[in-house]
Amino acid sequence: MNNNTSELYIHIPFCVKKCLYCDFLSFASDDKVKEKYIDALCEELMFIGKERCNTSLSSVFIGGGTPSVLPAELIVRVMECVKENFTLNGEAEVTIECNPGTVDEEKMRAYFGCGINRISFGLQSVHDEELKKLGRIHTFNDFLNSYDAAVKAGFTNINVDLMSDIPGQSVDSWNRTLKTICELKPAPTHISAYSLIVEEGTPFADMAEEGKLDIPDEDTDREMYHMTSKILSEYGYERYEISNYAKEGHECRHNLGYWTGVTYYGAGLGAASYYEGCRFTNTSELPVYMDDPIDSFKLDEKLTNADRMSEYMILGLRLTKGVSITEFKERFCRNLSDVYGREIERFKAEGLLAEEDDMLHLTEQGLDLANFVMQAFI
Ligand code: SF4
Image 1 (tube, helix red, strand yellow):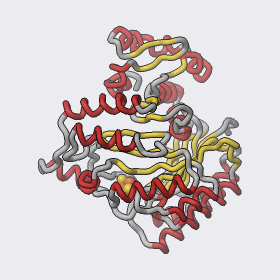
Image 2 (cartoon, helix red, strand yellow):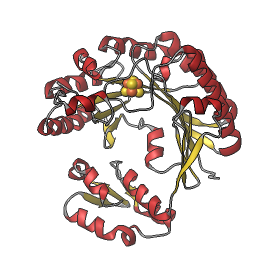
Image 3 (cartoon, rainbow, N blue to C red):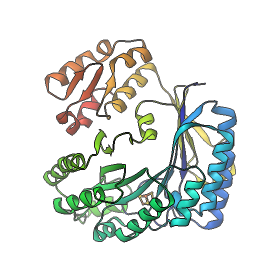
């Protein structure tokens, strides 16, 4: 058992309706199923807290799906169960993902009152026509009302998810999205800016195949990509990961833990866990999970030392500060240069990697070509 702090992820798979690009484990459901799901989830949380996790939690992340689609009392129940069965660090970051249009001030107050201290809004765009193209259920005005409700309820740590490469999006409209969000009062403490990925099996994939998906071309994508870090840095957001930006001291602790190989426990449908060098995943079959939430997980893989070194590099290089050479040696009893010396020298010579003090990190150009660089560490 790992005696350091660990993280807890809780999956709520329900959404009002499926967005056209979404391949997450999420679906619409009725109130009875939602209640039964929370019964099962609490049973699993009790089990993890008592039987598997003897460590304190540095973060809890209630994600989905759309957790905020549940009645507030069900989220409060989940949080009570977490507090009864786990020890939360005094400073633990507790996040809930919310979609605009599914929350009001009362719900936000209930979240705040039960110990949630960070809100993550899935907005994507400030333009209603772009939101419509994505199949989102909300308008920009819904977002403004939800954001206002969060602020009034007392939340000071708020993330907003934004998306580039939306069908029909232009450089100008992306520029307006970024600036509008940065100029909110109070401004969000964190912004995640991802580009759309057309995933197999989604309506967008079918539309792309039929030539009906009007996504920005590669030059426009690159222009938007470079504009993102430039604008966000002008507004005081520091890029700390390929797609994540934060005001000082507000990096998402949950994601940072994941990228630095912290032990994490996943509860809920399809949730993944990583502990004692092994990765586990819960079933994604709702009836199977609700029938037996404790025994419905399987071992995916036991990571070898080589797997763990590779993962340490791939995840750590996503962070702009990079990976610590000393920490690598402490974790794996090997020198980084003995294991990956050839790759590191090659990328340094090509200007994609740089070393400063103890840290090896991607350069600006390396961040642009991150996937290419990371391939070499697999
Ligand atoms: S709200 Fe999020 S999880 Fe739900 S369907 Fe849309 S993209 Fe998927």
